[in-house]
Amino acid sequence: MRHHLGDSSLKPSRRSRRGTSRITIVDVARLSGVAQSTVSLHFRDPKRVAPETAARIREASDRLGYVPNPAAMGLAASRSRVVGVVVPALTSAFFAGSLEALQEDLAHEGYQALVGHTGYDDATEERLVRAALSWSPAAIVLTGLYRPPAVRALLQSIDAPVIEMWELGSEAIDTVVGFSHEAIGERMFAHLYARGARRFGFLGARLAVDRRAAKRARGFVAAAENRGCPVAVFEDPAHAAAPDIGGRLAGRAIDAGGRIDGLACSNDLIALGALFEAQRRRVAVPKELKIVGFGNMNFAGSTVPPLTTIAPPAREIGALVAKIVLDRLRGETERGQMHDLGFELLDRGTA
Image (cartoon, rainbow, N blue to C red):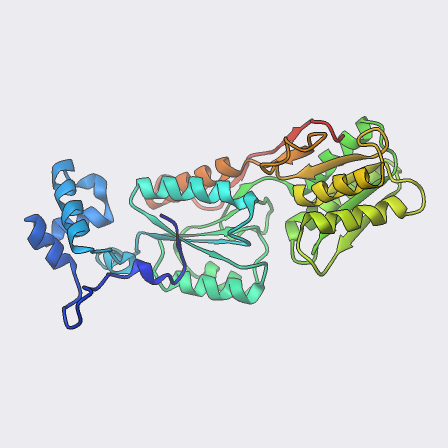
């Protein structure tokens, strides 16, 4: 089960009748007929408790409605069994695969992921990181490499593992798992060029805050300029990525002087809008306009024509982050590693 930072459901439950005491680990031990220390060990490290005993503890917990407090479980150790995870958006299909794999693998070892989302806001990230640190977390996982100065200072001062994902770079605080966004921009250009495009545009939304998309744009523009090809960036700085934004940006690109015939989009939502706009204007895709997206969202293979896109290794990132966290907590690996998982271009019908 994934929880949000500060979610009250992580606290021990109370009996519903007024005046009754808080249900504690003592109650669970009494009902299950085992020692309190065994109950505590079960919630901290379930693999160290015999299966029959663990089943009795779970049955007693269910009957009492007891929900362990990860912070309290950590009092017997230097850290809790909580891993704080911070992502830009919970609803983003980009990060869902990473979160699912990360949470599943951590839960298998008795750790809980507390997930918070920033909405690409620096102040929110600082608040979430401070909230996570109040739980004495086993580790902190964040998205991307840019950190507000106050957050960077906080994270550099703790001894728990700090894993940054979905990006690569030397500015990592500790360990990083991801891929190069500049390389994605270069790959987008190379594919469009190989398909015959010669005048290029990059479509993006809020590139000032979506720094990874901005890196893809920079990689794309640099590759075009290195080839001596005309290239322009069309951005909506006020709105988040959505098909209607992609449509408006594509309209600007199509109307620009000198017919643009190759579009790279910051993500598949923008690309979807660009495809719709081209079809509305009767611009043939891919014959007259070639389009490539990013993300391999669940609709990408079902558009007409199917969307050519870059597929990031979302689940692989989450699984590797979980493995690194667990290995670090066992003392099996060192800090300061960089893991490049690469990406895949899915050559479909729009480019």
